[in-house]
Structures are given as C-alpha cells and as structure tokens.
Length: 248
Ligand SMILES: [Fe+2]
Ligand SMILES: [Fe+2]
Image (cartoon, rainbow, N blue to C red; front, top):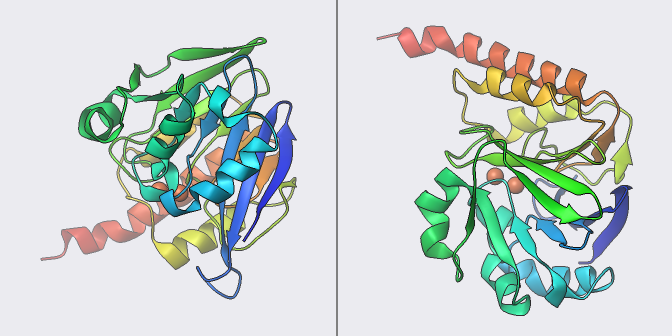
C-alpha cells in the first residue's frame, strides 16, 4: 500500500490511499489533504494504523514536525484515528474543530487541548491562505460534523460528502453525483435528517470551484451546482421514507 500525492489546487496536496479490500472489486480510497502555508494544516489524520504510511508521504512535502493545524470532518477513525500520533511528532500542532466536536469527544480524546472553532470562524494559515470552518451537524453523519473552506482557492474540504467507491483520478471535471448516489445506495452512510438539504445548500452559497472529497476524486467545476444536486437527492431519499416513518 502506498500514498499517491497530487496537488489538486494551489498549495493543496491530496495524499490518497486506495484499499482494495474495502468494497471490492473497486476498492475504496481514503484522502488526506495537506494545505501548505506558514502554518500548514492537515485535514484528516488518517486511520491510526495508516500513520506510518501517511507520515512518510507527508514528509515528502514538508517536515512533519512543522505541522501547525490538524482538522477533520468529525470524530471517526478514518477522519482522526491518528490525531495523537500527529500531535506527538508535531510539537506545535493543535487540533482545530467545532464546538460540538471539542465538547463531545476532543476535549477528552486529544492529547493536547483542541482549539474550538465557532461556526463561520476563519483560521489564517499565512501567505494569504484563509480557511473558514462551517458546522454541518449530522451531515452527512455525526453530530459534530463540520467542514473547511479554503477561501483562497475556493476549495471545499467536504469530508464524507459525495462518498464513492473506487480509485478514480485525483482530479476530475466529470460527474460526481452519479457515483455519490451509488455510494449512498451501497453504504447507507448518511444520517438522513430534515435539515440535511438546507445544510448542503448553505455550503453552495460559497460557490466552491473545487470539491475535495475524502472518498473519491477531487472535483473541479461548478461546486454549487453539484451541492444543490446532492441536496436534492437527499431530499428525495428523505421524502421517499416518510410514509414508512408514519406507518404503525
Ligand atoms: Fe465519516
Ligand atoms: Fe470518511
């Protein structure tokens, strides 16, 4: 197993690991994003057991001990399993996450106190790079769910949204909705909830130009249109299940 490294937007590197044993025969990718700046940030720490592999991959781009920020979508092994391993090798690194994530998990589970981000708060990485944190509770899953938007490049680090199986290209301008619908049908990983469509449409207002998927290729194009289409699909799923919810 090896990590494939690609620059998907200016200063944003995708460290991708394909695991053929998950969802065979296509397999499944885990993507971790390194944002370079005076204060480099890693979005998704990777699984704890993947740490040696990702540490070696990141070291090809920068000295790992210089990492300043560690962030991720929500508290789950693939998003943050290696959080404490990164904190151990990077003495100035801080975990940054939303209020819910810190309160529910990170104040206890992180080896150093996390920095709490308010909904809409911006972190400056230096060299003009600004990251905005946005709460997305229960979307696609996890009460603590949130995402980051790199305002400099218009890149939405969208975590598990648009999850798909397979090992596609690092960057695509093709369809990501169809594979995401197939992914939801296959895994059923989302917590369908009445706010979901509105939460995703709120992200579309930022009109991202690149969508950096945790499980799938990064997408370059009309990010708002893709997000609206995804929101519509979740609304459709929710409405389709309403009669079952009402049945005695
Ligand atoms: Fe997840
Ligand atoms: Fe994930």
